[in-house]
Amino acid sequence: MATTALMNTYGARKLTLVRGEGVYVWDDQNRRYLDALAGIAVCGLGHCHSAVTAALQEQANTLVHVSNLYNTLPQQRLADLLCELAGMDNVFFSNSGAEANEAAIKIARKYGNDRGVKTPTIVTMDGSFHGRTMATLTATGNKKVKAGFAPLVEGFLQVPYNNIEAVKALAGNPDIVAVLVEPVQGEGGIRVPDDDYLVQLRQVCDANQWLLMLDEIQSGNGRTGELFAFQHHGVVPDVVTSAKGLGNGLPIGACLARGEAATILQPGNHGSTYGGNPLVCHVASSVLTTLTRDNLIANAHSMGEYMLGSFNSKLAGHKLVAEVRGKGLMLGIELKQDCGQIVDLAIARGLLLNVTAGNTIRLLPPLIINLAEANQIINTVCEIIDEFASQL
Ligand SMILES: *Cc1c(COP(=O)(O)O)cnc(C)c1O
Image 1 (cartoon, protein in one colour):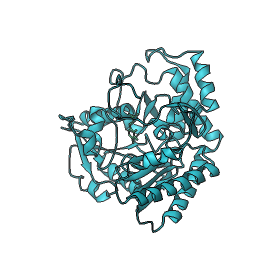
Image 2 (cartoon, rainbow, N blue to C red):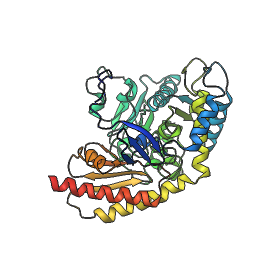
Image 3 (cartoon, rainbow, N blue to C red):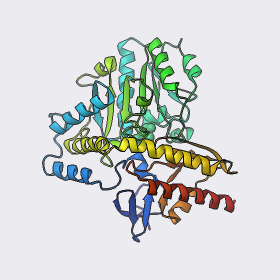
Image 4 (cartoon, rainbow, N blue to C red):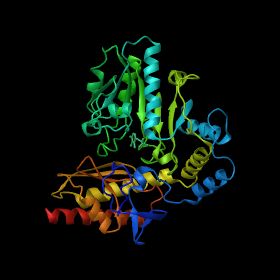
């Protein structure tokens, strides 16, 4: 029984989880689950990875927090490492994804205001998800996320995703200052745009002096088979946000910037008490070095290709399956009807997954997953879809 002392933002929750190791977690009845959700794309290294635990213990014994009034070495090291890996100039550290996007939004607004733009406006996409703060829920292209929270924040405009013409059509609008977009939509149903979408967005942004701002909070940190999804396409954004997989469960977000965008925020313009404290930064550095050292980004690529191919062949022609989509270990199986019950069918078979956008089974397994574990997910998910179909 769950306590009523928690605000009811998550509804009833089936499971009480007590421990984790690698790709597995255990509940309070000591039942084991293969975690194909990884804390919503957070635990890329799996649960209680030795490198993360060691970094956590080491830094907990050294220095946990001093505020951003002081320089710390773990923050400096993470900034250098992250900017080098991303090809960006500098970074602001926050505690979450939404806050990383808030920093991006403030950069875009100040970029516009500095240039005398009357109402600096950021273009975002239908079906997008950017967070739950007032500005990021306004940026989010999903009515359900906004419902009940009027008045919303000014200065956002949504257009259809993966539709370059819709963005080009805004070229004459003097208020536009930036485009904020997920390279692969996560919450929106694992939507993978056309291969040239980002390249074309880069061109449109360049032609109009708009900032290209990528929300890689879910798609980043190796998930799609590159450290950042934009690295598949040979484009570099002006701003990119990260969070989720960066801390493997420690709360950290990052807003990286390049070129002019990297010069916008100056002393006094932005801040955070906890953001980038030595504990989370030391852990995040260990996550990035472990991803590289253990070839986990390449593993995400190959396991993702394998899973996508297997699902496509096993589910081909299935009467309930609309489409299988994905990039790396960001996988979605869209059914022809809403399928929230799939979550419980999976729990009964010892598998954790999630359904997003109502009808899309979402798989975000840890990047450490091996072939046997991938096969277990594939087989179980296919069985569950059949079971769900037989109950209709
Ligand atoms: C999860 C997510 C966010 C919000 O991150 P929080 O840490 O929950 O604030 C923003 N954008 C995308 C694409 C996400 O997947």
